[in-house]
Length: 344
Image 1 (tube, one colour):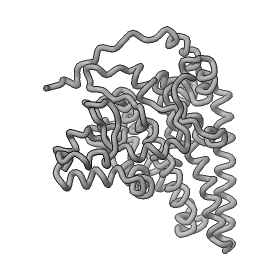
Image 2 (spheres, helix red, strand yellow):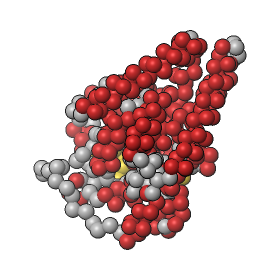
Image 3 (tube, helix red, strand yellow):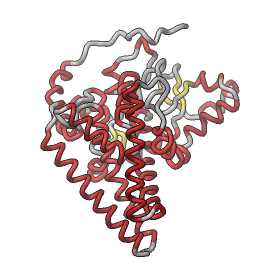
Image 4 (cartoon, helix red, strand yellow):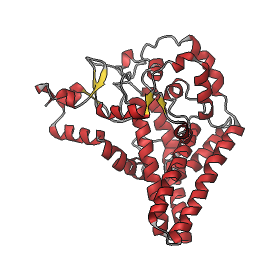
């Protein structure tokens, strides 16, 4: 049956508590500046220490160990960048744009382009008829069955956890963002160019100061470890047991937030490094709520607390969920199809 994915779906009325959550969308310049300080300063300090270690000839494993910690701060900086993309970090649109563009250079991600792509993700998450922007590739069981052998292999490779987290960050953060996406607007194309120039200037300055090889010895592990964590977060936010997906005409934005976006309950230290992005159901419910207000919003509303959390250990089970079964209305594994000859 033909589905017109350009037509808006018929959405259910917003629940009563929704209006009350609006107050948490108020940005605070003081909190934003404090978060920048408590993230950028330690990140810069770790860089300074790693530079001294590399130049001083210390065993490289020490630098690698510190790069794991530094990558945590880079993940946090990316979430602050993400808040700027939503216009939520500062009260000022200009401040969000300036800081967002600067953080984008550190995160190797162009601000204007990522902001537009991410806004599309929020408008299409969980919509089976509008997949493909800002999400992890997900096929239905029938689509997978209809695919060629090469198509099935390619899909299995994209869903392989080792390739996704070890190879994926190279493409997602180092290669793909260097080029404007098809159909990009002038502002976004210019943004990509300026970000690339900013990255080139950063690389050039470090190369002149400490040498290109020393810079790579520090930057590569930091960006790749942070990238692996970022890819995993993108994955688990909408790929978990009990997740909601629907065809466009029955798709509902509130259900996408409450049932199609995870509450990834992390230990407090990891929640800090990920700037509470694990409260993803609240983020999709109210994207304008800055990260520093998410926990307070969660604490006030029992209905938000009623969402079953995905724990750190439990999240690993999601790696076995690879296809959307429309008949059962849930994610299933490749293995579940083996008993069915039609699976191919």
